[in-house]
Length: 262
Image 1 (tube, rainbow, N blue to C red):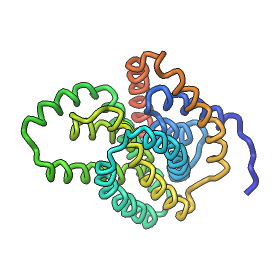
Image 2: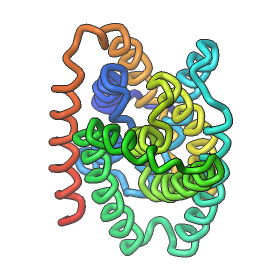
Image 3: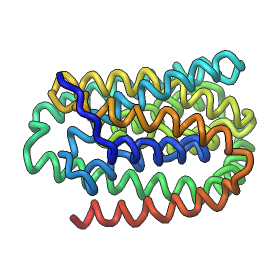
């Protein structure tokens, strides 16, 4: 493999990394559509490469959260119990459908569009979800019921991630807010990131096995995104996050509509 620097791809990685650092959202939900719509990569290649990209970047974030005791490993395990098998099953389906075929590309772009709409909705209605969760908690769900629902959420997220690379961030956090409204926000985010690491590695290596990972593309994205994430994290406290999230949600809905109607 001969590496060729592509400044446009690295700059895209920088912008997406900056958004991730500022808001905690935007990795797969922006990177994959950019690769498909702006750079013309096949949907399967964009998804597979983005998954390994996410696994590498989230590993660093997961380690930091672990050092600061921001991870509830029981929640992470419950999510993985559903997500990893679901991702493996989804990869088996993708392999059966042939990743490079036109019909599979259309299926992936359509699912990606739906995932972007769901992500946008989770950004817009997160506070409403939190309020509803506090009311829902009054129904006194048993610990066993919460555990089962967490595993089901993991399965849904795992399938979405394997097909689209989207879902492990905003959707996972929103679902955890609903199921664990009493948990501190930092531990919800930390647990979700820790769960995303094995999920994206399994899904990413599955796509590599299917031949839908471009390692030159991966290196170009990392060159831009790693500094972008550090820069965004540094300025996160000085930026109006709510406005950024609203803007990001609007962009995701527009891109999602384009992908669905393409």
